[in-house]
Image 1 (cartoon, rainbow, N blue to C red):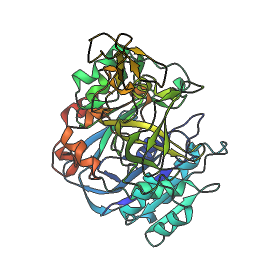
Image 2 (cartoon, rainbow, N blue to C red):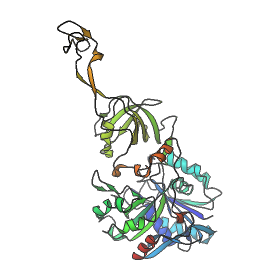
Image 3 (cartoon, one colour):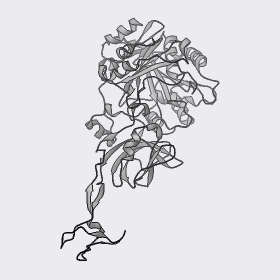
Image 4 (spheres, rainbow, N blue to C red):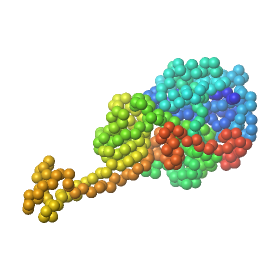
Length: 471
């Protein structure tokens, strides 16, 4: 079994990136072998003290067995990983001091919200810790209890990063995706990124296993961050063998280094299925009926009440852009399944995506009814009064008005926001076949076939190797 190294909370809103620190760790710890892909774990996106994407990293270290395969390039050297572990790395071999040096060099200690920590564990915690950290809130004491007896840890400032660092080592994938992250030369940090928009738009066609590349509805390149961090771009996909070639196809600014991560992004791991109550700080999937027409409130947010176990407001916020038009098209009586984060004040569900299960008929009055006796069109006798024939005096109730169904503009299926408005953990519909979506509805996450070499077969992705040499 390898040695598990978990690190978290080294970045800030102003810069740095914990995944960049992972590249520095890989370079510094080159005396040990990487076992499997480096891992990037996104944890509960509703944590109020997170920096940006609430991501932690995990490296597995030891003496590799099997045929090595490339997972990155740093400093002109191809980074290799091994499918299996022979001898485990030992913390007594100077490993602790080496990790301390990297963390203390690169962490954003000046930022009051940055509280780094790392763990080195001989055995990982149970997966339950990961599930609590991705769906709820884990106390620092709970994370430390999981570490004791398994290895060592180091914490800085208030040490809150030990929670994410430990949770990252506890991940046992039910579903997984991959992301190739390319980094800029330090001389270019904070400057404008040069990534051709047309090359990004071509990724979906040229590399069909990739997703969330380009926001066509808003003309936005989604693979590049907007912060002054070291990341040039990140391309996500289901097949890691396609990712290095996808990165090479972009052109534009040349990356200084790159690394492929195994991740929980796009897996819906953060969703609590069948909740008994809407607990603030969690992301829930609930089914209910639209109680009244949606309304647009100040700021451009769209709100509608949902009849569930308890009445609750559902909100599509302005940053979800065109997704709000789908929400505005809802009508009383529509049956929905909604996914979103529960907010405490005002109590509501911040909509992440929704499924229209059933549409209520939406009718419009086309005219007054005809008289049974003389066939003439009847007249209204007031807002609440019956219809009355002026010729013979026959009366008919208001419910006899002639109505026609209105087109709804939406259908029974899943809807999601544009690419640029999605959360890291939210599974894009591109990854979901109807069968696998039905599995997720009842709480079973579909298992996806990982490429053979990531599970231990002696296979080298030649496209990745070629790109490594090109760098």
